[in-house]
Image (tube, rainbow over all chains, first blue to last red; front, side):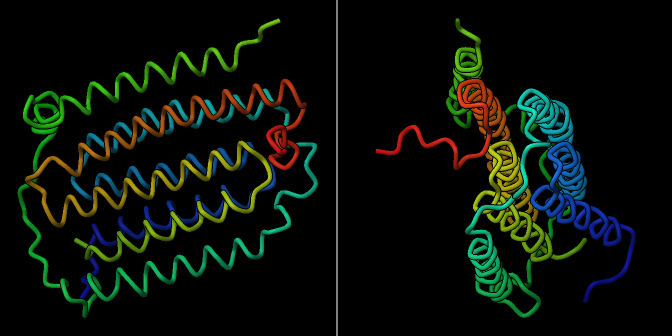
Length: 174
Length: 102
């Protein structure tokens, strides 16, 4: 059974931040408000990462997502002046989209998560190890020739290509 | 600590909200924000499984790091496309962008 302690309470706070921020992104009429709700949701995700013993991922979440991507989105909203001239924020298929999303959620939760990892699931008796890999292990793994050095280099190449592509696409060429 | 299924339920909820945003919103920037929500849900899922199933193995965190990279690249290129489309069509409503319709 779930005992009520500090880490459980913190989990619920960050879970509510994460889900509530996500709802705010989807239903807010003003896109600037939507971007701020996105920051709230991503911050909730960073808190969950800390609870999952991944502090480096939480720091990257705050730096990259909140610091870079959310600010980039706010700049795009300001550049496109798109928040004042829209009357309908949802398209004509919004109700069928809602039905599809609810069905997907039900399939994921009732059909997959609860039967396998739920309280009475087939893998509910999971031993939680106390020791986890550290940030140092992650750093070594990312540049280790036997582990992830090739995906690491490909990822840096992808970032370079995306940066060049973004500059070329968004440039004003008259 | 809370059991694994609670993290999975939170992740599934955020993912489905993102799916709804992608399918139902008309503004291209809002659709990009919903895609970011979905990628963030994937990261919560990856790190939850990493912590509960294989915390000694670095695969979970490494995959989450690559998801971060892909999300950053997607946001940069996606917003550049949105700005280029806005410059040409004076609109960021995805239904107005039908240049490829035959």
